[in-house]
Length: 303
Image (cartoon, rainbow, N blue to C red; front, top):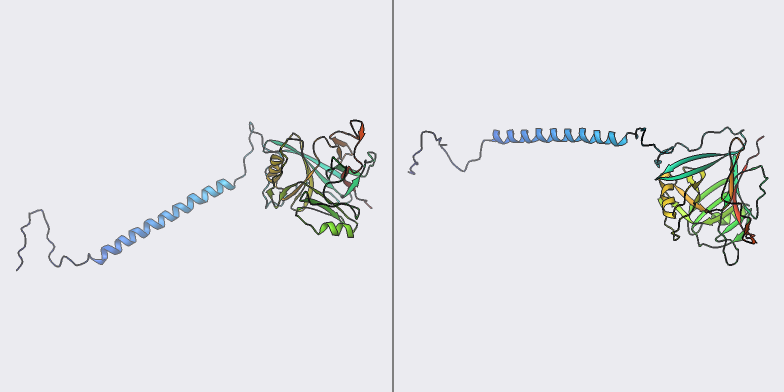
């Protein structure tokens, strides 16, 4: 018989097979404790996560010493329009709003009760139907021809894909977009519409880089959730910074308009005319190119 080793008075000997497992009750108790700890941990995580989300979703509180933008960087899912609601019988005008995005001062021109077309040649500055106008497509310096595809009242005046941005106005519907080829060129030709190409700035809410790196006053025509409006930088900006500001403004599509000191104007609800650029009909001793062209918004006829 195997002899048992002597034990001290303060020791306890377990009699039986040493290979036997510990009682199952101990294992169940351990499992229950682990389960309780896990449940408590998950609950705590959910509470903390919920608090963080609620803090992130809160709007920025207005402050006294740190002024906020008059138009906050827009949420792409936001459905609020920039322009106010206007009765259909109100004579057409251009709503003008100033804001600051990314430290860039911007001016928005939002047309109301007006239709868009294109014009080639010098504008009649006495035309009271015009509520907004700005130069549209670029002109080649060597031959004075229009850069990129251009359709005037159904008549193609230029062809080309040097710039992928486009703007079309067909049967009263204005479309701004970016594409190598657009069926709207042919449609504008067939239906007596308008079409021109320019630098692309924003496509589907994403900034598009352009080659020119200089800084200048920038202009653009934008589409934000089917609201068409024009934007002008009130400071000299690069293409990149201007396009980024348009993205943060919420523009889904944006195409460039001739910037710098190119001449144009807008007419507000009080019929006050706001001019921008310089009325440079003469460049040095020469007249502006005959193909200088403009985007024009005119008041719709109210019956």
